Amino acid sequence: MTNKETIIELKDVWKTYKMGAVEVHALRGISLKVKRGEFLAIMGPSGSGKSTAMNMVGCLDVPSKGNIYLLDKDIAKMSESELAKVRGKKIGFIFQTFNLINTLTARENITLPMVFQDYPKEERRKRAEDLLKMVELDNRMGHKPSELSGGQQQRIAIARALANEPEVILADEPTGNLDSSTGERVMDFLTKLHKEKGTTIVMVTHDLKTARHADRIEFLKDGQIVPEKEAFT
Image 1 (tube, rainbow, N blue to C red):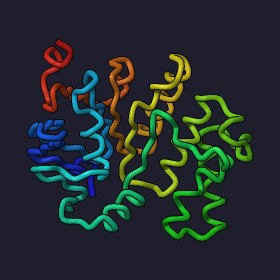
Image 2 (image 1 turned 180 degrees about the vertical axis):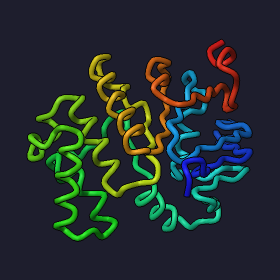
Image 3 (image 1 turned 60 degrees about the vertical axis):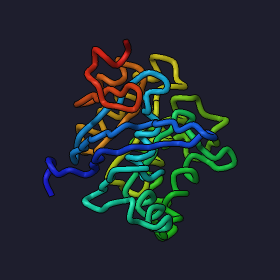
């Protein structure tokens, strides 16, 4: 496999929701390729289809029309159990609201995805501790989310996303709940992860400063990919 390999491809993807008698087209024929080792940002105003596009890329939903390929496999032809397995092993998620479990410690939050992939207990523990060192929070491994700052929680969330050594990291507004300086630190970490480890990252954001950390930016408006000058007009 080379760094130029297409890891995710959307081909003429539509997503239509029925709201009573009304059809709402959240995505309108999007075609997009994500290459292995790429850092892609998807930008657009509220209601542009960013979250729906992220759900498609992350195999959280299937298209109404069109095809989505993950490593050349069409996700529309997979069962829900197959999709769940793909999500668990191939994709790591970072959410705006962190989504950490408040009753678990930092280390336990990181080991949780590995439980579902049947990693042995000692391997889970060792990997979680290694990831905590990587995000510079090994001195907080016994702390629960309520005992951590927002930036620390987001770094724990990043470590958790890396737990199963996924092919792709999906980051949904990763700095949305952080102040600007903490958000910049989180983005510096994601950029370092991309450059030093070659991690493939797809990030949704409404903030151009955040998006500029990426190699490439695609702009969405009304469910379609558009040139930058049209995205916010």
